[in-house]
Image (cartoon, rainbow, N blue to C red; front, top):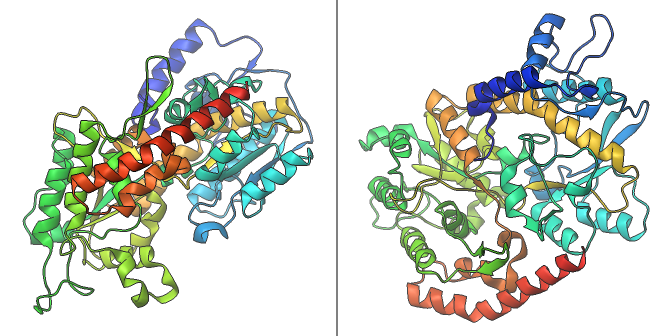
Length: 503
């Protein structure tokens, strides 16, 4: 089970008390206080409240004497110039407090790290980030203590041997709940973890796909709420398609479904794969030996694609937004599609919390649920993570590996108690979402996160098949997959050999 702070808070409190009762690791750092009278603590709270908070925390376990007094910790970050700023790592640094909850939480977290280890956090944005990473590694002149880049680039960097295995970095313990256990499992090669993320950044939450639904249209068409369906385990692709079809209306009565009419949802490039992965489909699996194997043509996977393509094939209920490109000022068709959802033109919109701010001024109420699963018998939901989501790595020529390990572990630990709750509870659950059910759904989505390697590698062009055969029948789809299988297997074997050679 993946850690989700909102739902796990009471459990963590009990575990922490139990741990403290048994042992609190003599000589280990667990609390964060500045030592100055009246100074800010990790949460900007009074000393009494801080004592209560630190008593309930899981131990960090850094040596008491550990300090990098006066040093700077430099991140290479993803700037706002890449991908219209959607994937920028804006939650690593804050210059000062400004009454914005997330900004202030980041500021206090970094102040706490200064109090704990004596380091000042800074971020240098360079785009594209992978070009900068390649330059500093190959020149053996790295100024960065840790680096961020989009997931698809990070995989390629790992395969080229640019990054250290997180398990070999001092002071980092990946089994701790402040590290994302899904990516730890999904991105392991020969039991090595070259790419990670976790509470140190909110981007993992922001870039996890979910379904937004329009409550006004739900009421207008007398449709049942998805909330109880999710909890009952009956929120499936079939039910989703039934609701999509129910609300599609030729508004102007001209017999043609086009811009200006009402639809169940809007489709876009990449949606077929997002629905497939989030319905529990897999392009690959791990065998008993922990080795990756391509399994896209299994009967279950083909049945899921059947359901996905059946949904997306009907342009009268699910039109392709790319076909309306000439109607969109600036060419941002995806933002345009979300604006139509906010105008009650669609029942559903698929995206991550990354875009939730675009619905802030929406007049109609909206809710959030996971992307539907494939079958009622499936025992869980799945939530695909955007392959462009920024991920964390440490280069092989990092200036000070001990400082890097200590700061990353401490920042992740501190973020679990300060930044993550603010992001989930203040920004998502209070500032944007409009009901308590959506807050509960965000917990389910976070626990269901799936990182998909092939979305970043596209072994042999296999991942592109779903997009290129969009809406085709099974025979065409199977034939297209089979034509790519040999190339995909060879690409996978090459990558596995490459990672093995890094040992």
